[in-house]
Figure 1 (cartoon, helix red, strand yellow):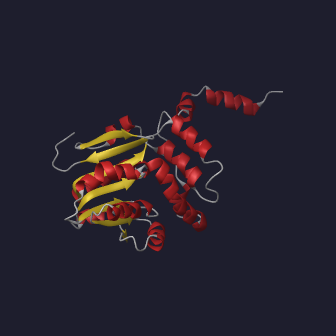
Figure 2 (tube, helix red, strand yellow):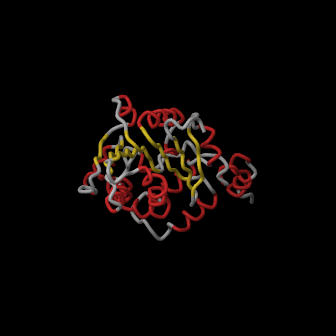
Figure 3 (spheres, one colour):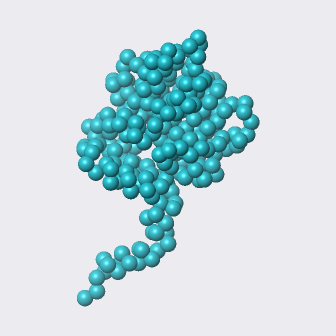
Length: 254
């Protein structure tokens, strides 16, 4: 007796589009992360925010970015300003604030997110860090003429539509006085496999594993990111499996 399920599986494996998706050769731009959905379970969402610090320490490596990119722009005699766009649960701006205090470098940090759930969590869990959390969009700050020495984001680029990407880059170029830096995941079959295997016993009751795999499928390679960024921006690969999109005002086109 023929096996329809087996036949369908063999047909899918012979389908070039399926093979490309399976090997992550193309972005899965239509995938949606669970925590981005308006009806996401509040308890699971809070646990996801609570677990982000561990994930970001392992994957995002912001301490290295701080040492190499941000700290050289700071001074013990002048208060610098930094804007984190799409701050989520707020662990990264809170960490940047701690590192700057430890190094004796005055740094005033503003962290924004358009999702009230994120701002509510960040405000409740990172009080006392000196970070100002605001429910806002980068376009509103740019339109108001605000400016910051450094503008950053973490793992946000892969969430954006093409139009939103254009808007973010334009806003960042207007808002940043010295540096704009957007760090994101770089899509890779190896990264996908390692994240899938390494997160199996961890992060219960949250969206970390499911959304992390979706994020990798949605993310850009360095070559793809270069192709969608406007003039003046350049892309640098970073380990492990990350990309940095950088803009230096007044530096000319890269």
